[in-house]
Amino acid sequence: ARKFTDKHEWISVENGIGTVGISNFAQEALGDVVYCSLPEIGTKLSKHDEFGALESVKAASELYSPLSGEVTEINTALADNPGLVNKSCYQDGWLIKMTVENPAELDELMNEDAYEKYVKSIED
Amino acid sequence: MVLRSSLKNCLQLSCILRTPKADFRNTTSGGLIVQSVSNDVYQNLAVEDWIHDHMNLENRQVLFLWRNSPAVVIGRHQNPWRECTLRLLRQKKIKLARRRSGGGTVYHDLGNINLTFFTTRKKYERMENLKLVVKALKSLRPQLDVHVTDRYDILLDRHYKISGTAAKLGRTTAYHHCTLLCNADKFVLSAVLKSPYKGLKSNATPSVPASVKNLFEEDPSLTCEMLLDAIAEEYATQHQVDHHITVINPADETVLPGINNKTKELQTWEWVYGKTPKFSVNTCFDMVYKDSVLDVKVDMDVKHGRIEVCNIDLPEQWLPPALCSELVKSLTGSKFCPNETTTLATTLLRVCPQDDELQSRWNLLCENLITLM
Image (cartoon, rainbow over all chains, first blue to last red; front, side, top):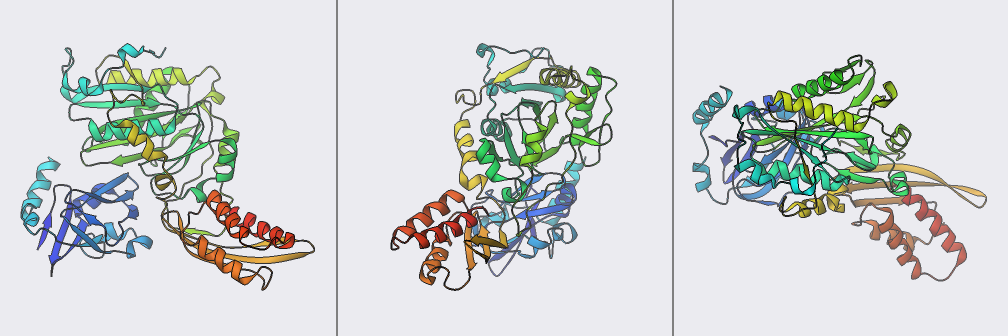
C-alpha cells in the first residue's frame, strides 16, 4: 500500500524496502523534469532529511525523505530520462529505494484516501 | 533616488516579522523590500538562502535587491567546464558561484541588477513578478519595447535578452530571481560564457545562449539606481506598503544569525565544483615536441568533481611506462583541478632521475592535461 507525505512524496514498502517517488499532484505542479539529483547508495537518511532535488522547467525543488533509513538503490534510468518522473510517477519514475529503520514512522503518513482529501483541501 | 539608509536602519529581519506594521490593512499583500550593501556574490546568495530558510512568508512577501562585482553564476545542476572558460575567470579574478536555484549560467557585474521575489510555495508566480518588472521599466521609459516571453526571459526590442530567470521551491517557501542588464560589460560577458573544453559528455542542465543588450544602450540616461528604484516603487505599490528599502549587511550575524556559515558553504570547492553532475571527458590532442607531432588520447570520468576513472594513451615509450601508470594512479581520485594536477605532477617528477629530456616531455604532457581542466 502506498503512503504519502504532506510534501507530496510517496513510499511503498515491500519486504522491508521502501520505494520512494513523488505524487501525480507534485509532478504536475513541477512541470517537465529536466534533471534528477539523487543521493549515493548507502546514504543514511532521517525522516524529513533532504535527499536530493528535481530540476524542472519551473524551478529546482528539494526532495525530502518520508522515513528514516538507508538508501539501497537509485533509479539510474532517470539520468538519461528524467521525464519518467512526469510520465510514470508511481511506476518507472520512482526515485530511490531505502530500508525502513523505524516502521512506526509509516503510521504517521497518509494513506491514499487521506492524501486525496489533503490535495483537494490545498487546491481550494 | 534609492534610499540608502544608515546602519541604524539595519533592522533585525526577525523583528520585522514579529511586529506587524501599524498601517497593515491587508495581511496578504504585505511586502518587504531589502537591499544588500555587499557586492560579493557568495554573501548575497547566502542572504537568499537565509531568507528562504528562516523567514515566515505567510503574511509578508519579500523583494531582495542585489548587485555583484564580476562573477559567473551557474545553475544548481550545471557543469562549469561546459558553461564558461574557467582559465579566463581565474585570470581576470572573476568569481565562480553555483546558486541553489535551477536554470542556466549568467554573468554578473555592477551593471547588472538582481531581483529575488520571495513568497510561500503557493504564491509562487514568476510571470506576475516579471510583469511587475516590465511595468516598472515602462513607467520609467514608456517608449521601451520590453516584454516577457513564455521562457520567462525579458526581451528588449523583441530580440535581445535583458533578463533571465531561475527559481527554487523549498518546503514552504519559494523564490524566483532574475537578472536585469543595465550597463554590464558585454565584452567580458561573451568572452567568459564560452566553453573551450572539448570532448565533454554530460547530462547536466545546459544553458540556452542568447543575444543580449544593455538597457543603457537603448537609453544612456538609465542607471542601475534608477531601475532599482522604479522596481521597488512598483513592488511597494502592488503590495500596498511604503516605498521603504531596508538595507542589510550580509556579514552581520546579529541581523542574520548563521549567515556566515552559509556564505562559507557557497565558497567551498565541494559546492562549486563538487556538485557538478557526473561527466566524462573523451578527447585527443596533438602535442608538438621537437620535430614530431604526438597523438594523445585522454578519457576521464569525473564524479563529484573528482577523477573516478582515468586513461591516458600516449605513443609507446615516449615516457617511461612506470611513470605514466603512476600518473594515472595519482590522478584517479584527485580533483579535476589544474592546481591539484600540477602539484601531483611535480611530486611525481621529483622521484625521477634528473633528466632534462624527461622533464620537458613530462611538463608538456602535464600542461596539456591541465588545459582540459
